[in-house]
Length: 208
Length: 208
Image (tube, rainbow over all chains, first blue to last red; front, top):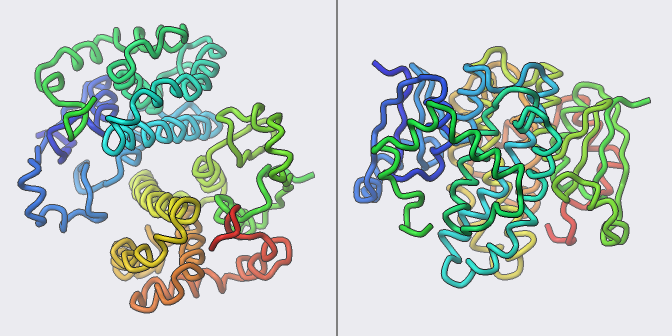
């Protein structure tokens, strides 16, 4: 029986990075998929602490908030830095990834038709700090010399942006190399090629 | 010489909770205030990793992202739970506080004149989960039996909402009692009554 259970809509959405960090650590994940029709009935929503999915279970521990899930798994599987100083830097990096994810989500769900052009034009400004951080760190990860939960999160978000703004990484060699390197990790590669993962739309409204 | 330094605009903004957790742990904080005029020149902004303030320094460690600062100080001063399970629950709570803070910030900076009434009408829906959690936890804190960084963050945000929607806590006895209890902690009380803290506007645009 899988120790980890995820309840979410049938989309990649806010759970891509979580699935990647679990896969990379050889962890099984039981997935409960909730259709929109089911969600609209309201019972499940009413049972969620903050009225939202995803919901993640590790034995008796029930977590909401996708970044809390990433931190939890990162903490358990050595992907939260090797000391407190690295942990704080990883927190900062993840929060910056989240800032960009919020912009992405706003574009996808609220402004796709009218805003996509401007978003892609503006994107380099938001990618530049990550390019700068990665090009300065010889290990090729955001912080220290090991992969952290913030790396899976950034990687997942960059994959989304490659779809949305196709040539967005062209002028960012460190980011390009980063994406290639993480995608080539055997268990990540296997996840990305796996039917269950590939078939999920990135977002709930069909836009990407 | 203070080990902690904060560089920020002359507002409470995203640094209220940070100042509270530092004060409650009797930590000195050196503050560098940046005026809007100074900021508009661009040099300070250009020197910030993600182009934003606040900036927090602990010796050689430089952090951006207010929640990374809260986690850092929480980690150092025993305000991050007594075990990994509590740490994950605290992460979840803080992320939920951040969700509400984002709504608050959007209202203040983008929709104040037209949206304030609807916001206050809708607020109970967002406070209800916190009321529920607090009423179930005998300690009166969000997680476990000690105060955590998430508590300072929620407390700070509730103070903002008492100003914005004056009777917002009236139907939430656990939240009312929580605010009173934290405000009565001697070092928090002293901070709230201190001139340097009181004189700062909550937000940068004068709205509250």
